[in-house]
Every structure is written in C-alpha cells, then in structure tokens.
Amino acid sequence: MKILWTVILSALLISGAGCAKEDEVSDATKPKTLEEQVEAMLGSMTLDEKIGQMTQAERGALTNVSDIKTYHLGSLLSGGGSSPASNTAAAWADMYDGYQTYALATRLKIPLLYGIDAVHGHNNVKGATIFPHNIGLGATRDPELVKRASAVIAKEVAGTGIDWTFAPCIAVPRDERWGRTYEGFGETPELQVMMAPAAVEGFQGTLSGKNTEILACAKHFVGDGGTLGGDDQGNTILTEEELRAIHMPGYVEAIKQGVGSIMASYNSWNGTKLHGHKYLLTDVLKGELGFKGFVVSDWEAVDQINGDYPTAILYAISAGVDMVMVPIRYQYFIAELRKLVQRGDIPMYRIDDAVRRILTVKFRMGLFEHPFTDRSLTPTVGSAENRAVARECVQRSLVLLKNSNSVLPLKKSATRIHVAGKNADDIGNQCGGWTISWQGQSGAITTGTTVLQALRNAVPNAASVTYSVTGSGASGADVGVVVVGETPYAEGAGDNSTLTLSSADLAAVSTMKAAGIPVVVILISGRPMIINSVVSEADAVVIAWLPGTEGGGVADVLFGDVPFSGTLPHSWPRSVQQIPINHGDAVYDPLFPYGFGLKY
Image (tube, rainbow, N blue to C red; front, side, top):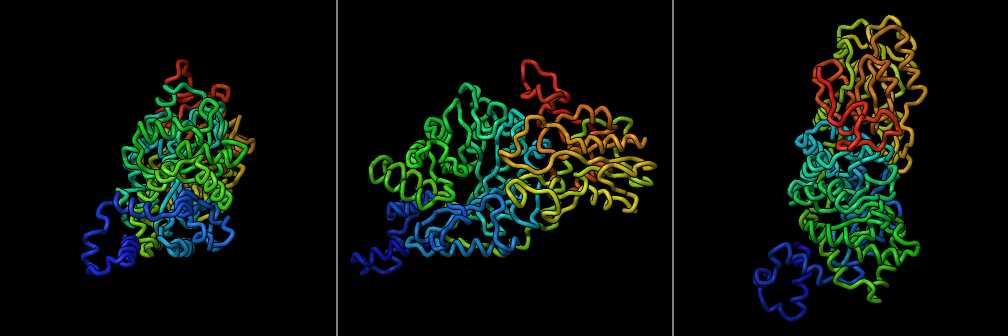
C-alpha cells in the first residue's frame, strides 16, 4: 500500500499538486479502504498488466526468469515435483524470494502469488511433515483436528515463502475406482460440510496478513468425484438437484468461511466442461453463492474446452475463470487473450472483474507490505512439534474392522512380533501420491518413521520385532503383523478397475497364517479395496489409509497406548462389481457400512 501511495503521490506532484505539503496530500488522497486501494491500483493498470495478473505459469516453464517482469506475471506455481535443485526449505525460500524480486521490479510492483499442491503437508519439500491424505482425516470425524493440521501445513508452507495451497480438495468421491479418491474426505456431503470450513480456517485464518496464514483453494468445482465409472476428468451425469445435494454443500461452507480461491474442475457436467460452464462458475458460484474470491483453472484444463486454443480461452474467461493455470504456454496465452479483448470478444468489464478479485486477495493477504519469506518460520518445517500433530492425525484415522480373540492391542512384552509385507518399511508407500513428486514413489523419498520402525521404537527390545517381506520366518512368534496394500499413484494413473491386492500381498498374509500364529493385517491404501479373503484369514484387520511420515501413530494404536476411534468415511464393497456403493443407496449391502469402526 505504501508502494501504491508512492505512485499516486508522484502523479499528483507531476500534475502540479506539489505545492501542498507531502503529509497533507497523503491525508487527503491516500486510499482508506481495501476497496479504494484495489480500485486505485486497477485504474492505473494497462491491459498488459491486467492480463499478466490473470496468468499463472509453471516455474520450470519460464523461458527466462525476467519474463516475470516482462509479462507482468501475477502468479507462478510448482507442479508436483517442481522444486529447486536443492530440495530444502531454505532453498525453496531463496527461490521464492528470487522470483518475487522480479515481480517487484515491475512498474506497479504487484507481488506474485505462488501456488503449490500442499495437499497433505508441504509435500513437495523433503523433510516436511507429511500428514494422512484427506480420506484418513475424514475417518477421524474431527474438524478441530483438521483445522490444527491445516494450520501446521500453512506454517510450513509459509516457511518456504509460498503463500497459496491448492487445498482443501472437497470432492465427494462416489466411485472408489477413481484415482483421486484419497483426496476427498469421504463419500458423503456431510463429511465435506464438516471438514471444508475447518481446513479453510486452518490454512487462511482470517486472511488478514499474518505470517502464518496462506491462501486456501477449495477444489474442484464441481462434481469431480461423481464421474461415470470413476473416470478421472470424466463426465458427471446428474440432475442439477443431485449435483447440488451431493457435490455442492462443501463449497457453500467453504465460501461462508471466506475461502479466497476456488479451482474449477476438469470434469464435465452432463457433457459440458466445467471450465467453460458460465451457469455454474458465474451464475451459481459467484452470483447465487456469493463467492467473492477468484476462480483459478486447473493445469492445462482450459485447453480441453475446445481444440482451438483462442476459442478455449474465450469460453473459459467468459464463463468466469479469473486466473488461468496455463501453465506452459504463457506467452501464447497472453498474446491470444490480448487479441480477444482488443477485438471486443471479451469485454473489459470481465477483465476488470477478474483482476479486481485477484488484487483484493493480494491486498487482504498483506503481500504488498510483506512480499518476502519470513525466515523465522523456515526452521519450523518438519519440526518435532509439527510431526506430533501429524502423529495424532494418524492415531485418530485408523479404523479397526476385525479383532478376533482380542489379538489387539499388541503386547510390548511379547517375546517376538514378526512383521511382513511390502508396505511395512517403505515411507514412500506409506505417504502415497503427491509426495515429493506428482505420482509419488516407493522407497526412502523423505524423512519419517515407517510402521516397522515405529513398532521397533515402541518395544523395550527392538530385536524382538523381526521382519521379512514375504512373511517367512514367522514360526514361533507371538503374533504376526502384515502391512500390505497400494503403492503410490495420483490422478489418471490411479484409476483402477479391479481394486484387488497383489498376489505378493495375499501370499504374505497366507504365509504368516500358515505359521500358526495370530495375524494382524494393516492395509495401507488410498481407498477401500477388495479384501474379503484377507478379512476371513486374518485375526485382526486395521485400515491405516495413507498415513504419511508419522508411522508412530500406527504403533501407538496397535499397542493400545491410544484407542481406536476412526470410522469408515466410505462404504466398503464386497466386490468391485458392487461399485459404486454409497451410504443412502436404495439397495445397500456393503462388506462394512459407512461409519463402521470397532473399538477396543
């Protein structure tokens, strides 16, 4: 705001107003309200400066870093895995501040918004605290815990300078074959209504410029979890009444909480792409629901509206998209949008509305006063204090499906506990997709505690916890723990039409059972899977979802230091042919119902 006043004062002095004292001019003309500040800035902008604010480029796509200044770019992002060469919190902060320097070298010195998919922690950064994915948080049924977790994530994100997360995802996944099922809190609108405002409040606070607050982004508006067959980016075939009843309530609550941005969805609604849907984006979202923030597109989603790119841009901006995540062809996008405005195809009032919304958020966030990283926050990334909150989230998310003969809780005094399964000692599998890279990866990709390590940490003699991937060597143990399930995936690649466990997983359970000992199966997965044979064979079955880096939370509950409290956020199918199956169906016969969860 001081920068803006300098521009205005200079104009007054040049025009002959310099005869007044500087403080008198300031008192008389300096904009007082946020709205006045935004309008003063907007009124001084050229068309190119306005279009720049509507453009979001991927950092790795910058032809030259000086393009930030040349094209007046309003936003950058890091896609999944797009990181500085040294993937540390300090390096991220250095990178962010470097980009911001170029933005502040523009005529109006409008700072960048920098976006990232911090969807279960600051998950692109090595050493950051990684929380359970949203499906696990949905199992907690605890919005206060979600708010605390989101506040921790916001603090870690802010510690690297970044000021905007593309979260929370408040999709309502209605078909577990969808590869993004784990990104939603559960299959019912009630869970989104419960968790969406809590997450927004945790990320944003009051969006008043505090150093630990970042911009939230509710996504993906609307119906992304309802596509036919769980097809990613597919077609959601519903009446408007059904769309509103199932997929919209979470957005209503996020807007009430003051969410500053909303991301449009890849999916179509009854054949029309959401990114070009004026009725839903403008008439409903901005009009009826009163959303005052800005709408951002998803990655290259505008391209999908029409095969002719300029036409696609026309449809998207006209429909109500305010900022376009281009993210690669930013120069082409800028040139074509400029032509559309100059020809009158897109009226200036639509451009002004979009830029006004973006500037309002930037002013509210205090970016003009504090555009650079608060380095006092950088050392908090991955701190023990933050990991303790993530560990609590893990504890509260676990769901107990079976516990024959009270095999759980485990006894720390056991002579030997034998552990098996590919997911027992793999931090990458434990975290799932959107961790360090877009699709995620198996292996020691970041710092954390695996389930095996946590079990060993929990007992007086760590040597009493033995391990083999296949389950061999279990004979003579007091109990066996087999950790099986999925390996990492994200959107697209995660779509799965079978949802079956691998033959190696099933063999590990059978091998352990053949040893003649009680068997506990822990499922690491981003959704319900077909586990009928495992439920029959095992003495106890625990659903751990994708718990993140803090495997200690799993051990806490297995040993009874913390009770089971999680309940299913999804109906558990008997077979893949039964999918989609959801709470409230006229015919409803799941293996385990929505809300199920045993206690000790």
